[in-house]
Each structure stands twice: as C-alpha cells, then as structure tokens.
Length: 228
Length: 228
Image (cartoon, rainbow over all chains, first blue to last red; front, side, top):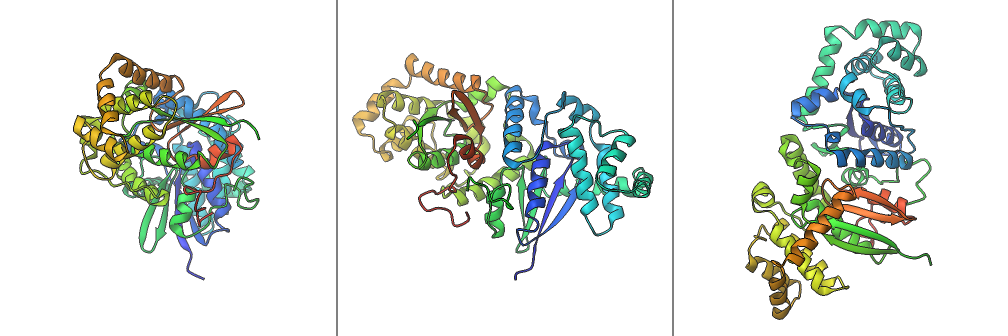
C-alpha cells in the first residue's frame, strides 16, 4: 500500500463553506488513503492578508450564496441553517475568540484530533445551524461540553486561549495558509509527489480525488450517493 | 418520458470558466433529458450591473485561478491555454464585438444552434487556447470560417453586428441574466417544476444533476470518467 498522502484543511468556523468541506473531508479520512490534518486558522487574517473582500458584498452574489449554501448543505447532509443576520455574525462578531479556543483545544490534545474535530463541529453547529453566539466564554464552554470535553479540560483550555503561545500558533497557521496561497476558506492542500495541490472551497472534491488518485463517491461515501 | 427540462447557459467567450461549462453542457445535451438553450451575453455588462469586481484583482486568487483553470481544463479535456496577458485580453480588449457577432450568428440561425455553438467554441479557442485576437472583424471572420460558415453567411452576419436589433438583443440577454441573479459567468439556469435553479461557475454539475433528477457521469459522459 502506498504511503498515505497528507491532506491539510485550513478552516474557520465562521465560514459556512468550510463546514461543508470539513464534514466531507472527515467522512473521507477513512475512505481515501490520506492523512488528514485539521488546520484551524483565522479567516479575518486571511481576508486582510490577501486583500480580499467578502463575496457577500455584491448583492446578486449574496443572494446566490444563500441559495447555493442551502442547496449544497442539503446535498451534503450538513444541517446548515442561515443565522438571522449573517453580516453581524461574520463581520461584526467574528471568530477570533472561537478560533483561539479551537487552537488551544488542538494544542492541548497533542497529536490526536478527536477533540478539535468535535469542538469545531459544535461551534459550526452553534453559529451555522442554531443561530447562537460563539464569541463569549460561556458559549465556547457550552460547545466544548457538547463535544465531550470535561470541566477540567475546558478549564485548562480557557487558561490557554489568552496566552501568547496560542495567539501565536493561530497567527502562524493563518500566515502559513496565506503563504500557501489562501484568499478565503476552506483551503485544502494535498501533498502529492512532493508538490502541493491546493483546492479552494467545497466544490472541487471530484477534481481533488482525480489529483490524489482516489475515487470520488459523492458527499456521503458511506452511503454512496444515489446520484453517482 | 417526462418532458425535457429547459437548461439555459449564459456565457461570454472572454470567460474561461464559461468555456468549461459550455463544453460540459454541450456534451450532456444528448445524455440528460434537457433542452439546452445557448444564451450568449456580455460579461462586462454583468460585472458593471452587479457591481462585481474581477476575481483576479486579488493576487492569491489570481494565482489560484490560473492553476485551477489549467487543472480543471485537463480534467474536462478542454484545450485551454492561458493567454500571454490575461488582463489585457479580458479587461482592455474585452468581448463586446465578439459577443455581438455571436448574437448575430444566433439571430440569423433562427431556431437552430449548431452555428452559434461552433462559432462560440472557435472564439474561445482563439482567445483561451491560441492567444489570438477576437476584437477585429478579420479575427471574427476567421473564427466563423473555422466554424463552417460560408463567405455569404459571414457577410450577412457582419452586416448585422452594428444594427440596433443585435445590440439590443445582446443587451436584453445580459439584462435577463442580471435579473436572474448573475454576477459573473457561466450562469446556468435550470427550469425545474416551474422554478429556476441557478448555478454559477463550472463546479456544480454534480449538484445540478441532483437538482434536475439526472446522473452526473463526470466531465466526459461519452467516455464515463475512470474516476467515478
């Protein structure tokens, strides 16, 4: 068996397309011969660093994305619901505290990634399914409880989030995504024969499969999409 | 057999992603139970009307698109090659004359669409494969000859392109695309059970198939992609 190809997914829980990409990659981590690396990063830093503007500023694009997200979420079986005010959620409240929290969970987990996977998912669920806050400490703690972290785990994570170590780790991951060419999330980097193949968004899985020599079986590989 | 679903593709030959979408839809017009309508329109009018900015203005996005286009073109088997200076081609030279020409070919063809399909393809081939001009009358005529139009056909088309009828037809199609929610091309509009389902870009075919109740067989349905 050939050695596993490393596939990194750079994401932020404020980004709904990242949720779709994240769930698909988590489903495929045991279907494809890949070593999936979760890379929580800060979308605000990417947009600023790349000089990009949020796509939702163009009215027709905003309307389309709203529709496209709902349609894709249904097809992908991800329980995405639009928050009452996506602009407030994405641009006023933001995700810096949340992504520092996820980064601290990852740092503390040290090698494993079950907790960082579950905490990320619960944060997406709050913001992009239940229209709940992800900026306050109690919001983050609630997500962590749902993700199965103990009170002691959460206390330790909370103590880490404001340390320079965690702030710098999030900054460095964001910087690394920028240097890999990111201008938004999700950005998926596949390491193929010593080269990096990057895929932006949640609509290139078939092409990604082709590039890494795997088969695309639809968004639910355990069920094999009836459509394929 | 259920009646054919109408699928409209709004496109401009200046747009490389439109070429990919156009070829895929032309391949599927006899595979899926659809009535494909070619809708040549003017991308410059869409960008202005929607208040959108070209994605290539963000350096990381430009680099990514260049790579993504080459990779997708290879996967889609479309002989796309980047012109020496895509900015000059797309934003300085533009496609107004070319799209009026395509519109005149369509108007004259009156019902059929073989000529408009072939002329569109030859214009894409000039700009996005052979790095040739598409703004001068002789360039348009050369494309039309390759597309199989006779000298008499071309003479008639040339006489039509500056008429108000053709100018207005192109304007109206562009306006219709905007009213359907376009903010770029290709924009594919599927008419499903009295509703319109819109798909932007050339990366939603699997989802489109799902929405119109058809099977996605990869970008080359006649060969059935080895990847699926």
